Image (cartoon, rainbow, N blue to C red; front, side, top):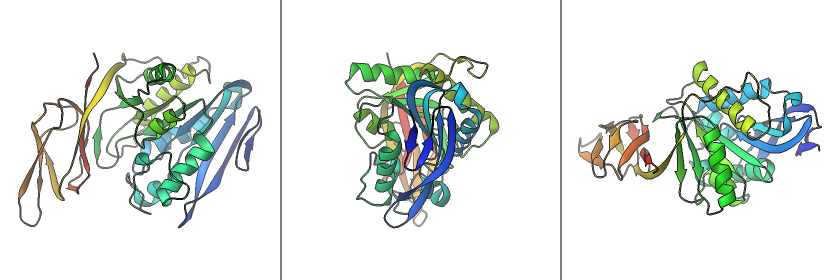
Length: 323
């Protein structure tokens, strides 16, 4: 079957590169796409990078993957979008869009009649994600974020979908596999799950890393995912995982209540207990100290490295092994 998104078309055995305009109301942006239509039947898989700005590993890995994979290696249809949120990637280089200050990964599947970021999310769902057989959204620790590599998936209450989510997550080959206990919320993979599309989030690298070794780690993971989904056959590119995946569950997150300067006492990878002081926020005018405590017991999976914070800034996310 022809793979077509808007005017972009790829016949079986063809790879097509191009971009499509997304009308965000106040502006129009060009969204880059690479369509790889395999020479054999198989699933339709969508991979997005650049949902957030400042997360460079996903941009690099998706661009490299699009160059490496040829249609004769592929079964099914592969849609690769290296820059899914151009305003944030090119303008803000942070989690929020400079157009409206909104984090797109809190508003999926979006609203085509909403603000710019809601429209961007709705465009991605309408043009890329709707109708997919599997969806992989790539992230990393941004410029101001310490992060342990992990895979995220959701429990939905649908046993068949949950099994597919978990199997995809384990196929990545990262040790930390962390699940949320429902498909609620505006995250990309949760919104896809609500449309019965198996979907995961993959986090690789931290602090705006662009190191080739980190990119290679994600590329190896993508090859394992695509092999698991039946898109590519076993080859020298499909390297077995070197660690045993283990399920964890999110137990809490810590957000700033005030504006000021953040001085952490506990950092990513540390074990903390509920109520433990994990840092202080100092008022730069008065010098007053606001104590920040852990909202749950577990390990800090990612934490704020930046100094300046405001109300709502995520300071830490905590998870524990699932027994």
